[in-house]
Image 1 (cartoon, rainbow, N blue to C red):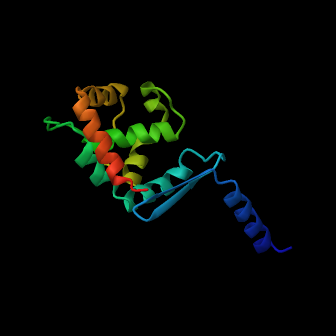
Image 2 (image 1 turned 90 degrees about the vertical axis):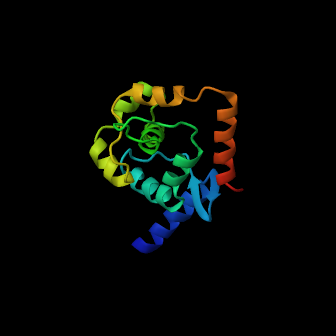
Image 3 (image 1 turned 120 degrees about the vertical axis):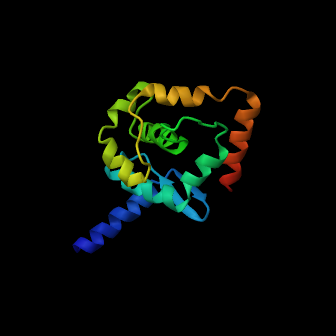
Length: 146
């Protein structure tokens, strides 16, 4: 068996381990139980977010209006929250575990990523009513056709 054949066999095995497949705007992504490296998988995630135009959607559907000229923007805040979750964080304070914020900012074209957990809690704390939650939910689910 050649090296090419063994790679094909590995790819087939990885495809057979697929547990979930999601298609958003004709872009497919599959999940397995395999672990990815924290930064290696982020380049693929950045490409995926760019192809589905996630940056545009975040700005449209999140019902928070920021007025500060020093604001980092909703996209960078929500992006850092998503990246923290992908890296295995389960608390806002785990935002510090991401590290290399400059690299991630460049990779995801986000400007500056927040460093403090309170930045995220303040953003999410601005969503006050059930009407705002429902509007955000409908906007996100409307964007993700089955």
